[in-house]
Length: 111
Image (cartoon, rainbow, N blue to C red; front, side):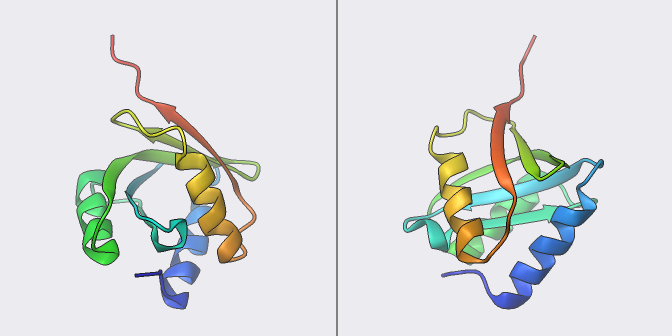
């Protein structure tokens, strides 16, 4: 199920809050990319956000971690190995809702 206009406004608000700050994110990748759901929060745990995103998307793979925005680049740091198409999927979702941020995906490096 595609995200609503209210969720888009909330996402844009959280993206502006993420400039210079670290937020938690939860993400559920769905097919088609327009059905992908991403949730951001300062206080909620990323795993809980991912579960909520999966409930909204109804299907797909869940990911969570932290994110920040540097200039107009959304940098997602995933706790698990993310698919190589994640940035492209989010770019498609953002283009659909007229969000101008580009996306860079990194992974947590374990010692």
